[in-house]
Amino acid sequence: MSSKTFSDDNDEATRKGLRAGTWRFISGICLQNPSRKHGIFDDLESFHHVLIHHLLRYRSTKFRKFAYNLDMLFDSQAPPDTSIATYTGGEGKSAYFRCDFYPDEDWRLALAKPCADIVNAYRSMFAYVYLPDNLRSPFHEKREGDAIAALQSGDNILAIFNEHLNSPDSEWPADDCSCSIRVLVPPWADAIPTKCTVGYTSHEDFSSRGFVMSMATE
Image 1: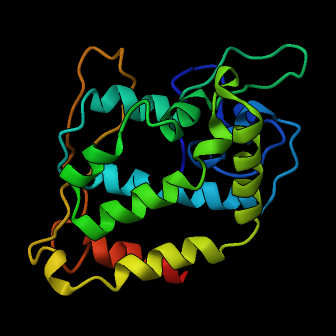
Image 2: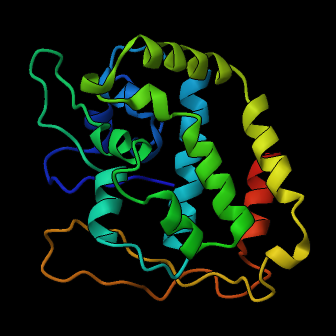
């Protein structure tokens, strides 16, 4: 899945610099620190962004400031840093992991309970890593270290998926179908469409449980 920039004179390769991956799904830390060596932690965070990107864009949700927050989370960037000749970003991802937008309760309203529980538990694994500097203390730094250590393999993430995918069938709605894809456009555009004509339309094509199960086994 490709990512878009909204600047006519800067393409994806220029924006990413030497970083590998699609801008929308690169970890916030890698976007903030272009010279950072990519690791397992970053892959696990990227997987989370892929998951919520699909759940947000293929679900009929009523999140506040939907288009603005989606752009902030997946496409925001800082002005180019001339000292390193590349773009930086990740502030939207930092805010997301701090629950500044898309808080846990909003996911519970938007998704089937087990699916929302996966998103919230998965996100919580990264919370201490993205604390702002003014909230850091020896206690928080220890929790950050514990979080980073827990994210050096996918075992803890798989445990989250396995726990909630084994929820009773009654917790997954029978009519759990997707909506047409919701178009992601810059919030400053004159017209912001909410849907386009392409996308999955049946329960067999895309359900939150089926999608999450397929991601967990890939």
